[in-house]
Amino acid sequence: MAVIDRIIHDISLNEGVKAQLSDGGIVTITGEKGAISRKFVHSKVIISSDSDSLTVSCDLPRKKDKAICGTWAAHLRNMNKGVSEGFTYKMKAVYSHFPMTMKVDHGNGKFIVNNYFGEKVPREANLPWPENEVKVEVKNKTEVIIAGIDKEKVGQTTANIERCCTVKKRDRRVFQDGIYLVEKN
Image (cartoon, rainbow, N blue to C red):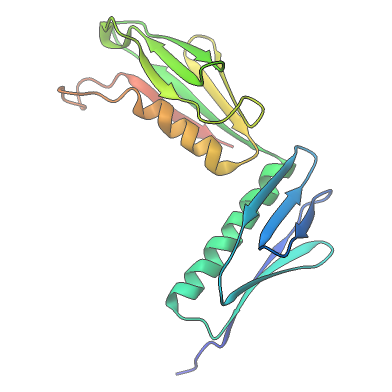
């Protein structure tokens, strides 16, 4: 049985995207949509840069080192895609009897859902990032579009909105009202 003595993940950067490595393990990727920085620190895993690619490598990896190499490579690919294309998630509000209304309040960092199941008190979801990082907008009264360059921030905002409309004390198979993720780009 052969033993793998080195793991290498090559991430080719899109056209117009530049990567910069700093001494503290901070990788900054800059593209036409903006820039994303993230800290990558590990004793065995190394990130190196060429003119048009990044390399994540590890010598004599153990199981957890292999996992970290793959995770870091996925993060770098997401950062590369985010600064060149961006991420857009589309959600749809579904209701059967009580028409819910949605509103974005960027000043207070809240997404407000009124009249959910006829409730008098509005439900709120946190929007933890400012509008220039993650843009949330309501279209056609039932569609919510979340866009940004950081996949984790866009995904967390989507999850916050979906979780604010959870059904409590009712059978989810019957009462299916809520705001659900429909499409990812």
